[in-house]
Every structure is written in structure tokens, then in C-alpha cells.
Image 1 (cartoon, rainbow, N blue to C red):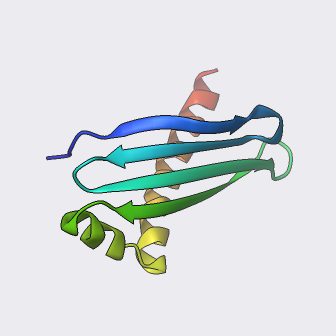
Image 2 (tube, rainbow, N blue to C red; image 1 turned 180 degrees about the vertical axis):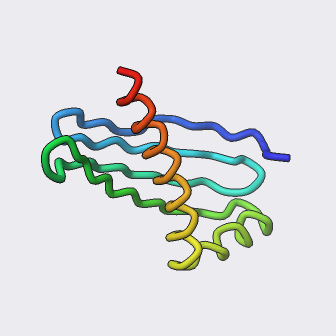
Length: 94
């Protein structure tokens, strides 16, 4: 089962299309997430997402250790696909 997680926006710059979050899973880890968006042609946006993890326990350290470049690429790819599906559906419904 997923453990309770606290999300907080810690920075936002709407003019530069940037936002940063802090995600805390108190029994496991803390993650700092930075998202920056930029135009990528007409009607297209490219998002750059970075995560910085800090383990708070032995289990958290194990969670962080799994994030090799390959694991992160696959993990963030699922996130990208979900957002793109949502946007395609939202655009088609508009």
C-alpha cells in the first residue's frame, strides 16, 4: 500500500513557466521536483523535470538507490505518457 505523502509547492514563476515542489513521504524519503516548460513549436510544449531525492530511513535509502538513469527514464516516461494522454483527451473534448 502507498504510504501517506505530503506535497507542497515551494516555488513558482508563472512568467518563466517554472514550478518546484517538495514531496515528503515521512517514513521513506523527501523529493524536490523542479518543472520547467518551454514552447517547442506551434501548439507544443517541452517540459524539463528534475528530481532530487533524499532518503530518510533505510527503506528510503533503498528507494533512492533504485533511481539509476535507466530507471528514472522509464519511470518519468510513464509520467509523460499519462500527461500526454490527458492532454490529447482534454484537447479533443474542448
